[in-house]
Length: 73
Image (cartoon, rainbow, N blue to C red; front, side, top):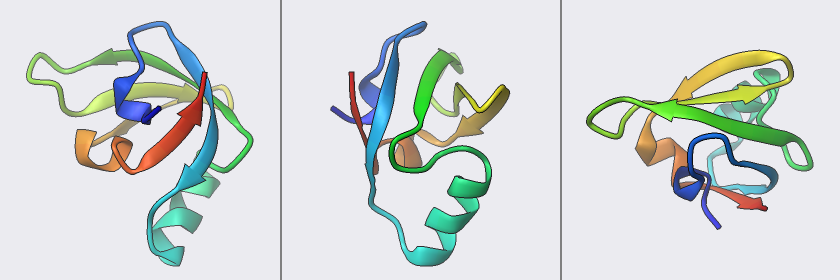
């Protein structure tokens, strides 16, 4: 399942990040790395960006980027 497919309040564990090494490293610094649990909080009225909770913080990702992260529910 893709991170963008989670419903509000649903969480999942990241199984893969399909980005280049630099962007994947930046996401990892914010708590988006393989094996970490993330929770979808809500999305903008137009569907992007999407707000997620990871490592006790909130992070907004573009829907395009959330579609490149795979999670296990």
